[in-house]
Amino acid sequence: KKKQKSKKKKQQKKTNKTKKKKKKRIKTKEKKKSKRENKKKKKKKTEKNKKKKRREREKK
Image (tube, rainbow, N blue to C red; front, side):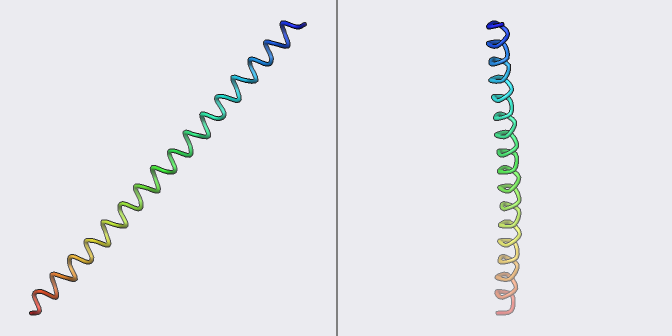
């Protein structure tokens, strides 16, 4: 009976660990995604600015 209990506890610990890992994995995935999107946005903005400046220069 005692052995069974300890076995159960170990199992519980294992599942908790995997759950935590999974959560962390998901979180990092989301972080990376948002970082990527932000990078894209920034690139778009800089491109827009470059075009604007170029246009202004050509006007002169």
